[in-house]
Image (cartoon, rainbow, N blue to C red; front, side, top):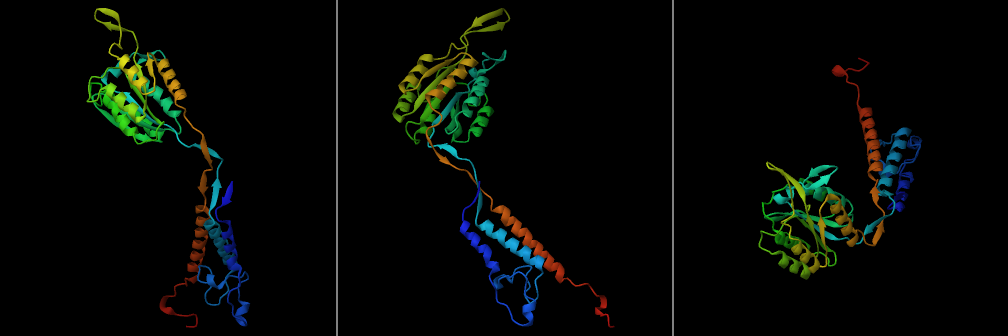
Length: 339
């Protein structure tokens, strides 16, 4: 729908039609066919020495003036009504990138992929569905660091997640420090909206903050912690002496992850395969609603640039025509036809 922000300004379009100061007698014969106010006499295309203004210039001038008036009345395109959430979650994703995440015990379409690749694939879809939430990303191994601060720009969070690589922050696993950093980033956000989803495949063996102490701080700060333990229970490992079955998740501390989640009002999930990991994030979507009841608004696109641009083009046309009309042919020697 097209509308005007200031429709009453269209009355200005009548100003050029108001009678201007004109001379009587002989000069009245040369008056413009279309009345143009005296106050417009200085504009390009309007004669200033009592000469008649050509009719086509008057029409172009009036069209330019009307377009300018339309521009200052601010034409707008008002879109369809859109619902926006009043508030979403402040959700921090905390992802383990220690060397153990390179274990290829996840399967995608019959092909083995490592754990970090599986996490990226599932989180990609999870991020897509969190419209209205403010998302952040923390990566950790020996050190924990903020890869993406809390933002509504989900595409940036997704890009930074895909750019992460195993071993970027060391070779150990500082679970407590990673959770502590996420709490620090969420502490100033509204209560009841602070959520941390932490995924790891190991045990805390680095950092200054213990996981239990981090969970205690999270509880005091009103942060819900969902922990995800990733890794298959068994896989076939081939060696020089043949194949043997091993447990690639033997270092996963499920007891610690369960305690952390329960203490903060969250839940612990176990992902042994890619489908299980997908189901876990579907469950989190249900536990943490994506959108709350919101307000409605209509997107507005300003269109004043079009009539303003058209008016400028018409005035440039008049100005060019006036310049060309004032140019006299060059006469060498300054002789006249009577010489």
